[in-house]
Length: 133
Image (cartoon, rainbow, N blue to C red):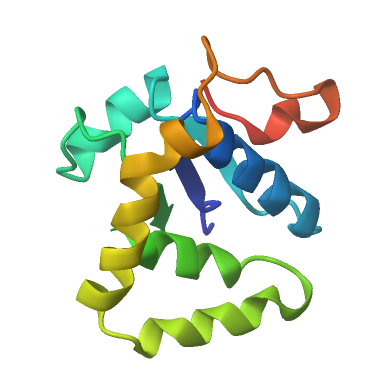
């Protein structure tokens, strides 16, 4: 049985939380699972995929046994969304160093530009089954 793709995100970042909410609303088949980088699931998964656990500046997608970070994760997440969002996967043809240059500008400034919460978001009851600890 194929496991669900897992998105690891910065749970205290307002910008990251906005995009998690955005993805949930556009994932009508409810394939995606979510976990904050500050949570127990992330603490277990990060070393398993040899990702530095102190790096909270990237969204991470674990899909089909492989981990994707930065712009590669964001673009690959679009493949799982309904509607025209799948078209954004076409951006994968842009070299990663170019995509990540722009991704990293946003990642470095996300707290300054969008703010930060004191604690990770608590998902509404109807979304709870999509979140891992």
